Length: 362
Ligand code: CA
Image (cartoon, rainbow, N blue to C red; front, side, top):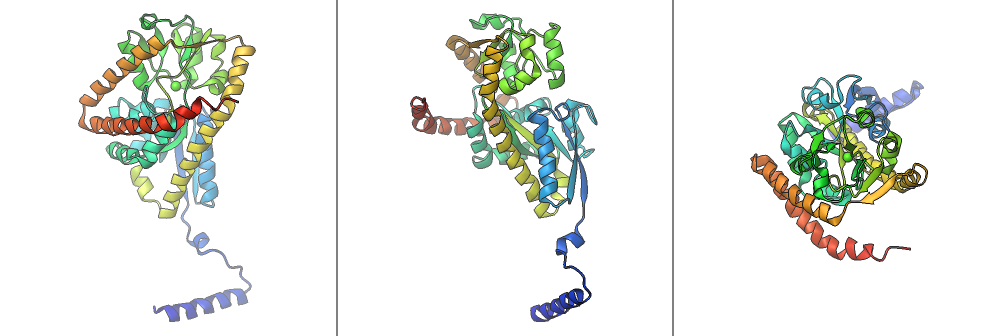
């Protein structure tokens, strides 16, 4: 149909519709296919900040798509077990998942770099690497092996070092310690002589309280306060050397994602970006308030890891990362990109963030 004749006919159609008293509706609304999707998560249902991020992604996607995608969010265990998220999305049993990529270290070692690396990136550098430094392309390469597409969907900021019932004065104090600590941090602890135990969020408090584990890390003051760890452990250590800026992820089954119209794909991407910013902002805004509450109201003993302990852990972390990378070419490729970017970030931070830090005190 020639353009002019199309416009003429379209014009006639509109005139007829208006003449018939019909309200004009956007073309999209007539043609829209709706999608009813499921999102499984590693978090207990509606878990503060972490589970809420998943709920918000669903809410924002529905709002932005004018109801064309409805996502039902399931807490860990409601549809699949918390650590069954990866397989459920990979196989297409459900369309989406929400968690943190280091939970999938057993699927592929490289997944861990897209969540947290001991002595690695803070939130700002992690975002810079993934969004603008080649990280997303590598993540796509790793996840394509599993028919998945991963997106950043949150960040905790620098975490705390964890909850202990004894002081940690030297690396020797970690020997034999049964600690809930996931991912690469767990591997470092194990190499330092401790026992790293992976426990899903909902079960940590009970394990700590009953002495099944001696220590745990979780996130930071805001979330740790909600988890009630102060009732089961006395010392609260910082900094979170093992998780200096942990990313949450939203994963989508790759085939289902690619089968979506382009505008709906863009809506999912936009909701993940928004969630990434929202959860970091929420943690940053709340952490200090709850740290004060833990110390002043609950008499938690705040402790900084001695420099010597951090130096030893950092040395072990680099050995651990090198070993993991040497086991597999794709992990090596991801780690090399990570290291190169970290060097660049460190050089830039030495003349941007670091000199400023000294003078920002009021
Ligand atoms: Ca943690």
